[in-house]
Amino acid sequence: MNVNGTIYAIYSLEDKDLVLNLLNRLKSSDKDSNNTIWDDDPIKSGQAWSPKDATRLQKADAFFLFASNSFMYSEFIQQNEFKMIIDRYKDENTTVIPILIDNCPWDTEFSSDDYNFSFKELQVLPKNRKPISRWDSRDDALNHIAKKLKKIIAPEIENAREQDLDKKQDSDSIELKKEEQIALDFTEEKEDKTQQVVDSESEKRLAEEIRLRKEAEAKRSALEEKKQIERVKAEQKAKELAQIKANEEQKLHEAAKINQKPEHEVEPITTPPDPKEVPISDDYEEEENVYRNNNRLKNRALIGIAAALAALAIWFFLDDKAPSKISATEATKIENVSGEEVEKIDAPKEVPQQQKEILQELVVGDSYKGGIIFKIDASGKSGTLASYDDVGPMSWSAAMKIHEELGEGWRLPSLDELRLMRQTIGQGATNDGEFSDGLYWSATDYDEYQARVMRFRDGNTSYHYNKVAENRKFRVRPIRDFTR
Image 1 (cartoon, one colour):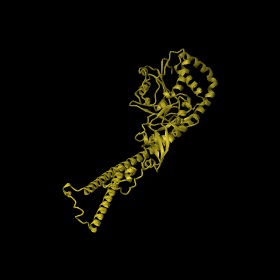
Image 2 (image 1 turned 60 degrees about the vertical axis):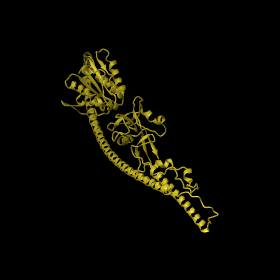
Image 3 (image 1 turned 90 degrees about the vertical axis):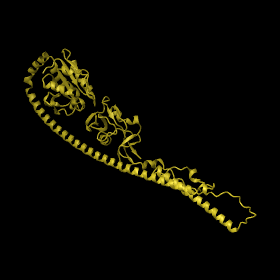
């Protein structure tokens, strides 16, 4: 299978460095041919793919598809452009060569109205369909792939030269090929078993994610029902307090009326008799003193009751949990109409701010201290919150130092914490956290050189990428623990 013409390389932006490394090896060894390699249209994560020149899809004599996790889970796989390439291959108008970069689901079946397609029916590189990431040496893998691709895109004269060389070596390599075939069979059998284990683990993870999603939905429904009940209770309590206030105001109004006589009942002012002419008996003076004392006590009692009722009404109306503030001057000194000071009434003490915070009930999804709560204990006094916004994209090493940028206490979440965020405030719930559909770094290691990554669109946690390379960048959602 020889290709002399145009070659279209399609790959994910995350794999650009590796792909360009391989293509540069091809270009340097293919100077005498008329081949043209287009490689300037990388696929961007979470975005629909659009070529700079759409006519290339019809002109290309061959397509190099660099299969990786970011490639297989990209929007490109679902687009008509991908189907157009496969349609041309089915019509024998072009050549398609998949090149495996990492351990991804490259053997997925693609369904169409006219046919079903899988990369398994193509010539897949590297040899034995072993991804580049699983080779002991990446240079060995790239050299092997470049050599295979060179045979496909090289001029016929070059192929003829290599065929002559192969014939001379045939007699010496028959036994060696037999041994390689035995080793190949064993390797393929071992890889098949490994793939079965991976598939089983994927099914278990999927079942666990479904279970956690259902639990999160049930919990969210229970919280919504609880909030609704609390709202109804609060409205009823507000109505009761308003009625109490109205009743107390009515009582105060009636009490004020008692102390005021209508104008028509006011006795006319007459000239007092001359004391010399009207003798004042001892009984009269005693009755007058008793009358005055009774009036004084009555006034004091009425004013005290009115003040107490007013304080009580204000206390119920302003806050059903914390008493209202009454200044020391207002609470300690109340005078009656005659100007005499009555007994002091102790002012309700103001509730400290910390006690007010404890009285406020917090639940998952509430905003609190600069973030959104996604985990809280049964007591409601401690938990974990996520930042309102994403940070990045950035490298894993920068993400592990996020506290230097946001402040002490902020940190990169683990893979389990990312799962919980998605299920409570992300796409697994109502997405109150406004998470992107793309990939997020976690603080969980995959091995010595790689860290686990999760895609929030569907909760896929099978990703793991180089945590040492500074050019490998993903989003970060910082989190912080809190205690009330």
